[in-house]
Length: 614
Image (cartoon, rainbow, N blue to C red; front, side):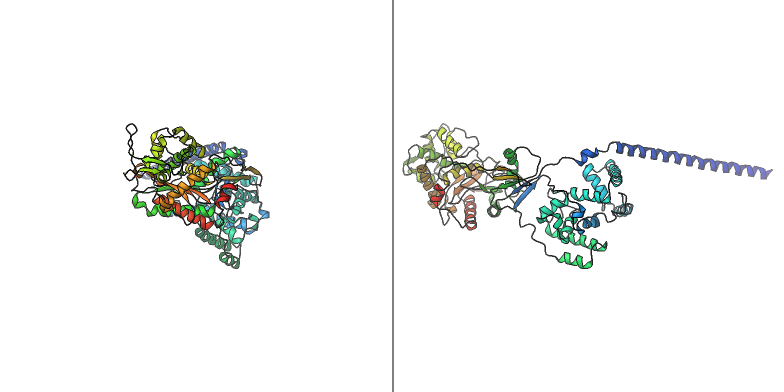
C-alpha cells in the first residue's frame, strides 16, 4: 500500500515538473515569437521608410566656389567640390587597393556586412566601455553616404544594412567601390578621389604615386585630422600606417612600402595662400551679384597680392600683441592700388576667433581722418593752403569743442591746421562752408555710410567703414579719379568658360588737378612735420591721423606712389584704449606695411605716371 502511494506521489511530482517545463517552454516560445514579430515589424517599417533610391543618387549639392589670388594660388574653397567620375580600370592598381586595405580588406568576400569585423569591434568596445572601433563595410558607407543622413540611430543603422544588402544584390563589387571612391568625403569640401587628387596634389587620380594614394586613403578615417594641407605631419604618419597595412595584406612588397615611405613629397601647401579668410568671405558674398545664382562649380580670380596680404596680417597681429597692455585688442587693414583694386584686406587679428570683418562691416568714427573732406571742399571754393583761419575758442549751441592739446593757436594756415590736426581751426573752416558740400564730396569720394549734417561732422563723428576710407583717399592718390574698390577680376567655370571679366572703363574725374596737388602737399606735411611723423618713409608719403573721443578709435589713412592703405585699431566693445591715438600705433602699422609693400614691389611708377598714365 505504501509503495503504491509513493509511486503516485512520484508520478504527480513528475507531471508537475513536466507541466512547469511545458509552461516555461510555451512562455519562452510566445515571448520569442513576440520579439521576432516586433523585430519583423520594425524592420518592415525601416524598409518602408527607406529614401527614394533615384532621388538619393541624384541629390543636389552646394556648388563649389574657389577663391584665387592674383598669382593663381588658391585662397580657399566654399561648397562641395566634385570632379569627373573615375573608373577603377583607369587608376593605378594601388589607388583602389589602398582604400580597400585601410577601410575594408574583406570587401571582396563579404555580402555587405562583415561579421568578423563586427564581432571584433563589439568586443573591443565592450572591453573599453566606449565606442573605440567601427565595423562598417565600404558597402555600408556607400549606403550611408548616398542614401542616408549621418544621424546616429537604430533606425538609420537598420536602413543602412538593408540598403547595403540591396547594393550587393544590385551591383558588382567593382561598381560599389567605384561609387565609393567617387562620392566619399576627403576634407576641405572635397568629395571623391579625383577631386582630392586635384586639390591636394594638383594632378589627376590617374597619376597618383603610391605614397599619394596612401595619403588620400589615410584621410578616410578622419578627413580633418589627416588633411595633408592643414596637418601635413599627421597626414604623413597616417600614410605610413596605410602602407604597412597594404604590405601586411600582400598588396605591395616590403621594398615598395619602404620606397614609398621614404619618397620625398612635394610641398603641398606652397600653392595655398595663408590667411586672407576675411577677404575670401567678402569675395564669396559678392560673387553671385556678378554672375547670378548658379549650379556649377566656379573659380574666382581676385586682385589679392598674396605676399602683401600675408605681410599685412603678420604686421597687424604682431603690433596689436605688443600693445595689448594698452587695452588694444583688434584692428583692420585695407590696401588698394590707385584703381581701387584690393591688394590686401585684414578684417581682424584672429579669423578663427571671430569671422566678423572689421574692414568691411564695422562702423567706426574716423576722427580727424575725416578732415581732408573739409579742406578739399575749401580748396574747391577758392581757399589756398597758405590762407589763414582762426584757431580760437568757439561755442555752437551747448557744444564747446577743444583741441587735443587743450590749447589754442591763434591764426594758422590751412596747411598748418591740417598738419597738426587743430580741431578749432577745422570747425571754424567747416562753419564757413556749406556742410552739404562737404558731405557731397565725402560721398563722391567713396563714403557709403550715413553722414549726419551736424557741426561735429568736422571732427569725424560720422561712422564709416575702413574700406570706404581707403577708397576715399585713393581718389586723391590717383590724381582725382573715382576709385571704387573691387576685388574680383574674373570668374570662370571649372571647364574654363569665362562667366565674368571686369571691364576697365575710362576713369571718372571727381577732383580737379589743382585741388589734388594742394591737398596732396598738405597731407604730405602731416607726415613730414605734423601728427603723422611716426608714419614717415624714405620716399613720398601723404596721409592723415585720426582719433575718436576717449581713444575709442585710432586711424591712419594715407598713400605712397604705389598703394593706398587704411589702418584702424580699437576694441569690438567700443571701450577706450589707453591713450592710443592715430599718431601712435596705427601710424607705425601703416609705416611697416608700406615699407613691406615697397620691398615686395621694386618696380615703382613715377608721380607723373601715377597721375597721368592710366
